[in-house]
Image (cartoon, rainbow, N blue to C red; front, top):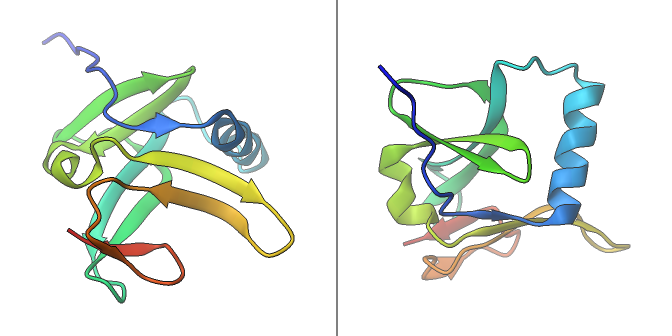
Length: 115
């Protein structure tokens, strides 16, 4: 069975890629792992974002974004298509941010949304 890479429906900014690469090196993430992007039920607005390193699962699509291997459950695409993931390093805000055009409402902390 041949694996095919699908065009990525999400965007990672250069700042996010740099931070993720730093974390991968710091945590000694192996080559068989990739960045998992997804959603799960919960949070104050209905859905929370998943962002972490994981191995590919049978139900995943795989993407390459600027040399970063990304896994996403096929069922999560409807909630994440068009999302931009960034990393902020400001005085008031520091961390990953999610600019999701599919979100009808977001919570104040920006880590959960409703669709």
